[in-house]
Length: 292
Image 1 (cartoon, rainbow, N blue to C red):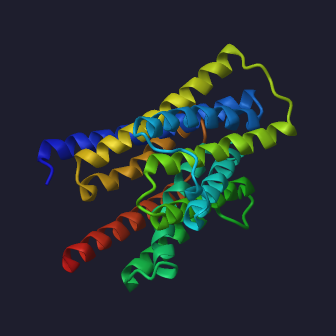
Image 2: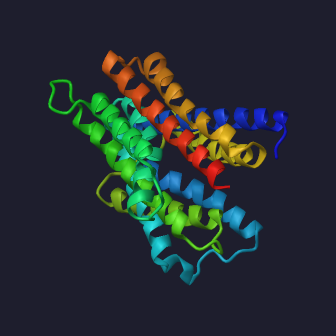
Image 3: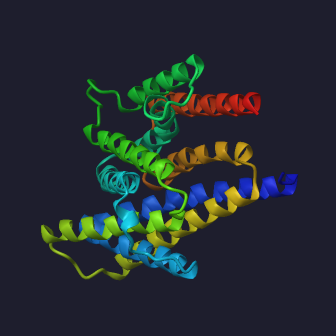
């Protein structure tokens, strides 16, 4: 069992990773304001491919094998593709704060998917918490009112893609490493970026755009690295709740950097989503303790 100092260090790394991912999203948003979306996605894919290719080769694994065509791997890769496309579109067209809040519903959706498709036992308390959490999303996007942002639905579709990715990861054979799965996902970024660039006019990146692209790749890579460090150092039951700090960082970026307005409905909906997610996590930890 990790010591108290290791748990504290793990908590620090998890918080740092969420800040890194949030700033990577900001760099992506700014890059897409200067360069075509497909070009940004292509460059991101190349950067991620280079990173994960190096990890795979360092482990002396074969990068391209028939394992790619295993249904679970294909599901994960397709989910990664759906997630990245709609995250791009959401960050470009919708409010940064709305996107940050909606993405926090992933644990709730995964709980529902585990119950429906994986046959996992989920009690009435967790089902109720999931339902309340999705009600919080309705408060955030508020369909049917004048302030409804239709582009916020892109973030909802991104969460569905992320859930497909996580479900595919869970069903994939243990013989396929996480870095291998990540490499397959990054390869889809390259392919989708190339397809989109066919319909766009690529630009020579300016110095400003190059800075955003480098920041996007470095921050996203740092986020993945810090998450790995956190998971290896601290107990999952201690560090997992800190994933919700990404919402706090998203709110801060939206308000103080992008000068977005956050109303009471956004705050209330975000609070409901986070509290519902934490409650589901608490019930899962309690169930594990009882089962063991």
